[in-house]
Length: 574
Image (tube, rainbow, N blue to C red; front, side):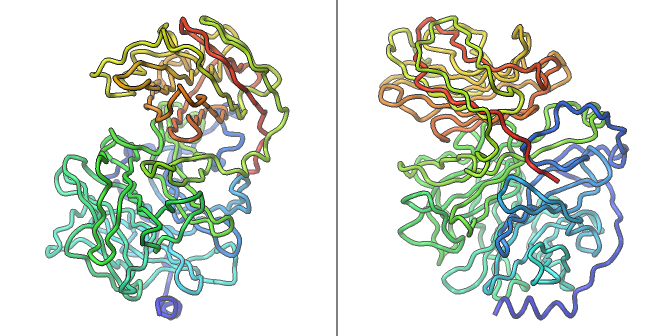
């Protein structure tokens, strides 16, 4: 029914040609005078990525409309075609057969209707019965209100979906005096799902004062939407909920499941991007499909002091069901640490993280994330280190790999816990703790880990590390990404990030995998239980002048159980 309705609309769809853009209230900094500044970027580009997604130039942010269609992966994303700061936003479009190499296409959605004349903001893809993709996205109308629109492919026989048309009924959902929806905080519709009554559901992020909302709408035909009496979920004191994502995860195994699946074999995940802090947090819980209520599991923390996809620079993420490999894949935006002036000088801003396979941990309490296996085909020049004891104060260089573009996987074993520091009960904020106890602060059991994108004399380095503390009833593992010495350029954001890692070092090795790509360090601790992404801009440790080290700045020795490192070949990206 939904498919025939959508296809029937094709005869009436029209794409208008207007591209008017005005200054908008946005979650990103608005530099109106810079939005159309074309950079005369230098040919010397030591910070451009080798294997992370980015366009040839200009600003990008949120990934949008992720999906598989006719065996091809589709990535749409927020893009400014006219400059290296946020503004003039359209939906750019690239496709891939492996989530590694990407081919660009013309922008798919751009301002052309009253419902999006002032901007085409984020949204999601839904695959309707029969395989027809449908895109719900936020548009900015002539009053600068945020409204929701529908677009569908013009030609379903084109596997690359290069042309899109918009519904003449747009906008389909909008703030009114009756519904009292906040017109400046109503955006980013999710992938829709079918309920037990065969009606489609979608949630849209919003807020009332400081109360975050996931507003729920229902539809029989994907065109006429009715607001539900209550939101799917709300939480006080959290501010605006951007880019919500809601999906089921299997209680067993690593396979992904259809977004509409519910029942005893799954739990549900609600992810929210907090506009106030630019952090993506999530809870795991249960979804009552008849009442349309999501309830986080007992003990869940509904803020960014709870579970996060990533404890570093990672925002506006989106998942999709990969029907090719039967998995759920997560994509996210790694925003900048460089200054606006430097962004304009280099001619670009923003990159995307490596897509991650996600599944529910055996505990049922959190997600596990791991880079998609396809990225491993870029590996070259395999280097290993034999198992060895790393004494306190040691720094060991790993040679034979291109340290500015590498994949490093290391495991540590702890043989003695006597010198572990006692964890003060007040040390509950891991980021603050990491900023106070970074790589240069000598400890008992740690800090130990990797020094990446390091200069020869270590005046520049990014440290990805562990510390182990004695808690009340167990040992506590702290994972940090310390950017305090990442660059001699003081104009960069060099914030240190941290997370507590749910691993028992008495019975488990401590594993760390870091993907290094010129200005990117994506790190996965404990097999993907905690992830920290950083953006760094060294001045010395660039290209062939970058080095890679293993270090231990604690007084207790630790054992390197294994180390594997690879240079990474360049992917074909746009």
